[in-house]
Image (cartoon, rainbow, N blue to C red; front, side, top):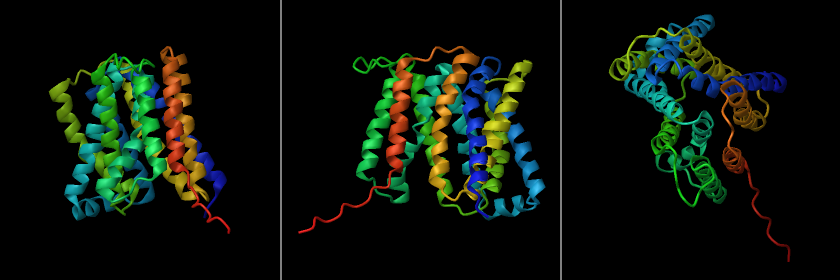
Length: 299
């Protein structure tokens, strides 16, 4: 049954989770490398997702679902969480969290561009306006407002943050062609990613996970960024009478996140970040507009 009140509660719960993760990423990366953080977070999230499936009585479906399309699920696991979070955590490791988070927020704009060749969708006039405004906002953030100089403090970090949007948009494009259970799909991706993340940790880091602060942060990321937030959002969409109203809740997240970064991490929030973020949020809102066709003039 639809219940808009429940949908708001679950939606706000998901937004609360997402609002804290930039802070959790930045604090955890002070103790763990990106690969180490991903290893512990992926393992934690896998256990959580398996527990939820067990509670729902769906564990037995994992094997048959994987056998139906093994290559597809392996590809999903390679993209998310393996490549996506390795790239994103590297960006957070190099950039101020406010920059990495806000640049990553342009993934929905990237999705619009990728939907043209991969899904056969067309780009509306308002989409072009949103794309221009969104990426201009990203440039404002990346250059700290000095657009004319195009002086990037860390070009590699900026490139990694923007590349993460390509990976995340690609992941959702793959998901649009799949009609299976979303939670089973996510769980399979994480389970199949675990060996890949272990190899990545061996190649680019080590297994000396001694700092308890890193463990706390990584477990938090696994539970709330990769686990509970996704489940709460699914529930919000299931109960929503009006999905657009629930979807708009997500715009609260980056602004709350900036406050947490200021007071918990101690980052000075640059004016350019606020300007750029406002431009990106405006772009995303423009994308959501449903313009009515113009009425013919009466003679």
